Image 1 (cartoon, rainbow, N blue to C red):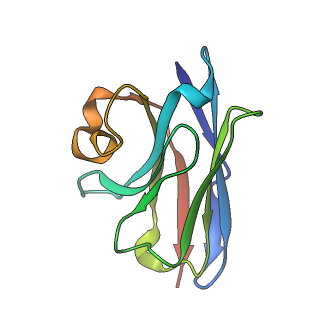
Image 2 (image 1 turned 90 degrees about the horizontal axis):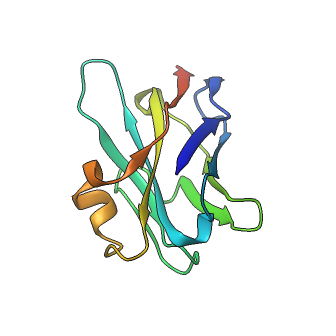
Length: 126
């Protein structure tokens, strides 16, 4: 499966962005999907996850209440709506996918077993 992210950019603190991740090479609904981010000099950090059918979601504490993950399986696309952005949200945002035969929690507990996109840069100016 191939993943391509888009929607990043430069935004002022307090603003919003919506990221997209398009799945190709297979049917999106067969994959649990998630977003991670990596800032310069920092380790990759889990952000949000959504199950294949969209019925389950999970967020890191740092984004809970500000970010919303969703998916449109008819379009093979997963979204990350980011509101009330802060300077510390600045990072490259990466989309990941794991086949639904994996437990949902594996997506953030064992992320290296998934497929990854190239990332999209989000920069929040304070």
